[in-house]
Structure formats: structure tokens, C-alpha cells
Image (tube, rainbow, N blue to C red; front, top):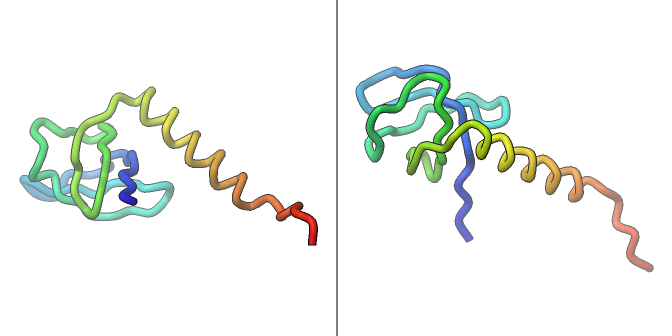
Length: 81
């Protein structure tokens, strides 16, 4: 299974590279597959590449769903022993 994650572009560092914020982790990614990316844009990131731009509302909804899934994984297992 592959997972692509929304990330906010914090800094453009080269013609086709950027620093993004992935849940508090800053990471350098390639923008080689996209045009017209600016600081503040949200992009979908998979294996170090921005695959597409995403509007802010959709990015926030997706990140909230990831946070909810993570919180569910943190719940104690209540299955009978």
C-alpha cells in the first residue's frame, strides 16, 4: 500500500526543490513533477516527490482524518484476553 501525505510548502530552495512541513517534520522534496508551486501551497507528497497541488481546505480535512486515525491507534486494546 502506498501513502501520499499533504504537506505545506515552507520554503522554495531551488528551481525544483522545496522544504515542506509534514506534521512538524521539515523535509526537502522534489517539485520536478509540478509547475507554479509557491510558499504556503499544499502538495501531496509521496516518496519525496510532490505529485499534485491540493487546496488548503482539502489538505486540512485530510490531515484531520490522519490525526483521528492516529488517535484511534493510541486507544488501549479492549478485546477480551
